Image (tube, rainbow, N blue to C red; front, top):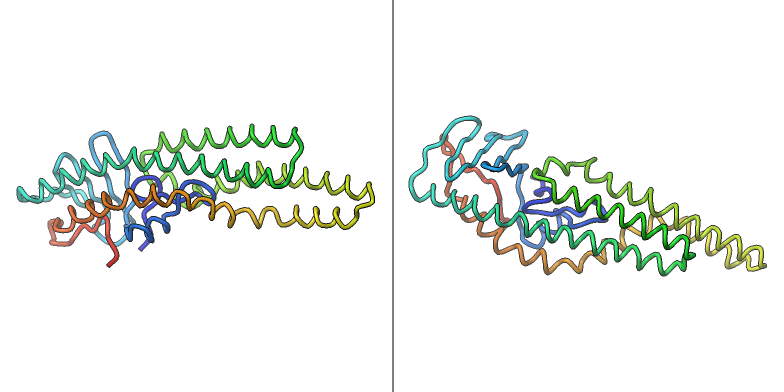
Length: 250
């Protein structure tokens, strides 16, 4: 079973951005094997396997793999509450994701400050970070499906960050090393070059550590996630199979 993907119940960090699905799974002990698409009138849960593969919720009604499922009054009420509460959770999750973008940008700027970049490099760094952060926030706001954030789609943001930021700072450090060498400080030049070579590998772990500041915001989502899991526990499809749209680890 994989953890739920960004950006609804769970929030992967997209490498150096908002939150890891594993982080929410560890914090709230929540997971799912489904993807989720939030439509204007429906909530669609889908997965490749096992059956059921496609679960559609609409105003307290349920369709599983294309077939309507009869519900008693209690389960219809449960499903209605599940839909309502899940839709209410979406903007909260997106808000935490946006905070994650801001935290990541602040963390990168702090790391960059420790390298004493030139004024020109710092200005270009700020410009690139602003562009990348604004783009990611727009995508978070516009996204309506966890399918938007699968594998390569998620990792491309980390790659983009590395492509935009790391070479810029590495070049700045390299220039500092050249200046040190020309002034006769060969030891200092060597240390700076080593620092530049470790830059790409050292940043991810430090950024992940800084992102832990969001843990309280993630924890604040847990009660609502547990409520969602409880609401759907008793609901079965027309073959008596539990939907298990959201599972809690014991």
